[in-house]
Amino acid sequence: MVHELIYGDEVYGLLQDQNGPCLTIILPTHREGNEKKPDFTLIKKYTEKARRLVVENFGKNIGGPILEKLADIVDNLDFDHSQEGIGLFISQSTQQVIRFPFPVESKIMVGESFEIRDVLYKSGLGLPYYVLVLTEKGARLFGGHVAELLEIKDQHFPENYHDDYIYEKSFQSASNAGATHVKSMEKDKSILEEIRLKNFFHHIDQRLQSYILPSIPLFVFGTVEILGWFKEVSKHKTNIKGTVNGSYGTASISQIAPLAWTQMHSFLQDSHHGYLKEFEESIGQGKGTSGLQTIWNAVREGRGRKLLVEKDYRCPGFVAHDSDALFLHQPNVPHRNLPDVVDDIIEKMIEKNGEVILVDNGQLEDYDHMVLITRY
Image (cartoon, rainbow, N blue to C red; front, side, top):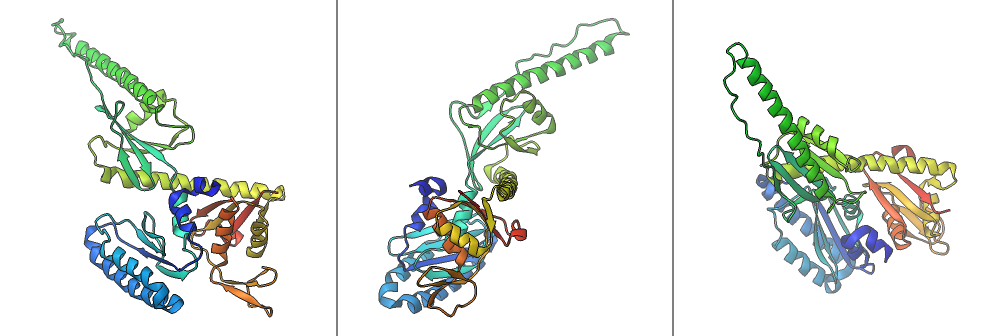
């Protein structure tokens, strides 16, 4: 299905559970080891709340298997590799733990489907990228996905630079010309080293062709001088979306990864501004709209092409039984309550093969936190 290809296995798998009972627990966590105990205490606290909610909503017989899975997950949680948030997703057929490299709000949801907002946001951050670390001694390449890096070690990388320039001490010249002659030799050596390093970086750039597609971001680490030389010879200038100044040739993945993710996250935020510009241009074409009720109708009619919504924007509502008309205030007609209209719109967009882009809170404040680009 199209939405499986767009959003990946995590989102697609959770979307399959639409008939409940589905339990979602999302909590903030800490990356640092000395904060493990408070994280564990918080999870235990929310686990007890979740138990009560499951029993209240589905009873002990139906909710029992869910609670058994919850206990098993909590007993086996790994606190050594925490990120900034964690999600527990449990149903009759699902038992999944997902970690988030960005801040999340604490929430417990029990219903007919999972709360997928944070998972969807993570999916939007999941564009693959590469990190190239350059020094005067060699090059290392890393593949990135969200906040995680994996060093590539194959026939191409890492690659060491071999300086085979042999500096020969100058012969004895006249006493009054010695200093000038040595300085000239040193200048020649410096120029030759620069030429050889540029040739080496050109060689590295050619090796990148085996990995980098035109749409894949590349972030380059190196000193100011090295970054300048690499950009001068690279054919991947359009891929370079950020640089980090410094010497990281011997740095560990744990040192490089947060710096790379900062660059990648900034690039993604810039991309969101591009989506907003696309929306503003679509208004003049009659294909841009905002407002919950207008978007609700367009999405249910299958006209939604691209939905932009702030990550934590939520709004309750009411839907008429006979017409599926949306009300934001309780109507005087038979209706059902919607705890969150935005979630229903998101799920309907994905069901109808539309694209959903979650942006940072506040980016769509001028448009009531959500906008839609329609197909027609």
